Length: 213
Image (cartoon, rainbow, N blue to C red):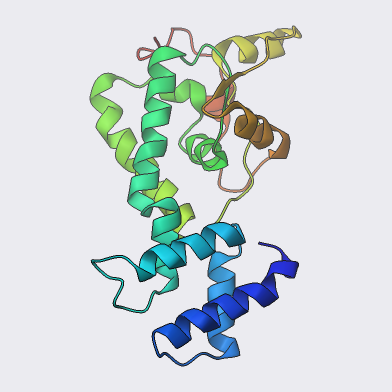
């Protein structure tokens, strides 16, 4: 939502509180605004309506967390879905190629974990531990509604080698929604990022990644 949505959003939340006979104040409105601002007004309005008629919990006044859960699922669900996307990409595209996911948090988390190339070098027995680390890191960012800086592309083995030799590489493969992936790439940062480790991402290993398809 943007500032022009603020007035109708506050009116909507006030109406919801009146429906449930709950007190409403500017403080309460600001809490809701901060929690919902990242979403589209129409989507928030629809989620509130669905909550009100939900036979399981519609009798209780909604909290911001209830609506966030309806809009994007729990942080665990979202993190597991993101990991499934990573797992498929490693197995079927492989880390020889550079990739761009349609989710910037995937770029951030994988870079913190050592990078795209390093991920492909892991053995199958390490995969459950990698999954747990990814989910934990991803959920932390989601829970804070935070999208920190991230690299525009996850560099693969071929592009890393070509870059070191001064050669050009093919464009990266877009994973997921192509339009969103392009937006992720355009919004990424080429600057060194705090708390990120890029050595594994930029170094070309001697052997092919074991999980690459």
